[in-house]
Length: 264
Ligand code: PEP
Image 1 (cartoon, rainbow, N blue to C red):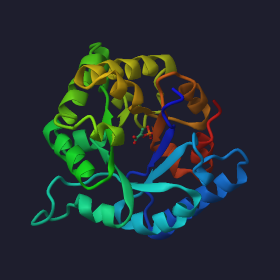
Image 2 (tube, rainbow, N blue to C red):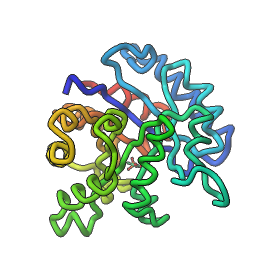
Image 3 (spheres, rainbow, N blue to C red):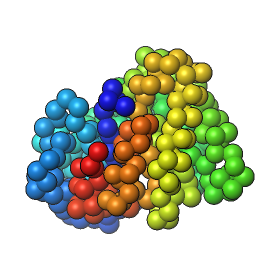
């Protein structure tokens, strides 16, 4: 997978509680990276690991000011698919772009289950993100029930094809996919690395059908679901896992710094 640059992302979700805490987390993480000798994120070298953090909206701007000098970028946890107008409480792609976001999470399982994000809406959000020159991280994955039914592949195929409907081959260069089995998110139950890798390979076969083999092989696919410093190396040793989307552990500067500095 040498052609695919590793990408590690930290999804802070609705944490931490205050701006002061958020800036401390960002500073703490940068300080840990500076301490780790073999860090790659800091100098944006060719072949280095790309690092993105997703703070809550109110903190994005100031977190960006802190992390940018370490070569770390920021993203938004979600955007609405309309450009502007009477959508109280929503945030537009142009807004997060204008405060420096390079990435947008689309279709996170918490948005799907708690905020009724449908595949149709997620598809509109993916396209809106691309239209504004940002990169979507499209999250897909089966629930516990779907896992028990043995329909992981069907669920992932359905989500990938619906959520990427109308996205051009050109635009696929800017799309990252995150395979996140819902039963592994926030549960401490990390998916077996080999099993996750098999799903990643399967997703590539879907991309090959939708686009071609070049898109299938060049699209970066992250794994997400209870990734920790203990599990990251085993996951990253897999042929088709190109990075991780990290929730809980990204709220600890030391843990996320270790994850970013995975040993391959
Ligand atoms: C996530 O929010 O995408 C996630 C994977 O969370 P956690 O690492 O806490 O399971």
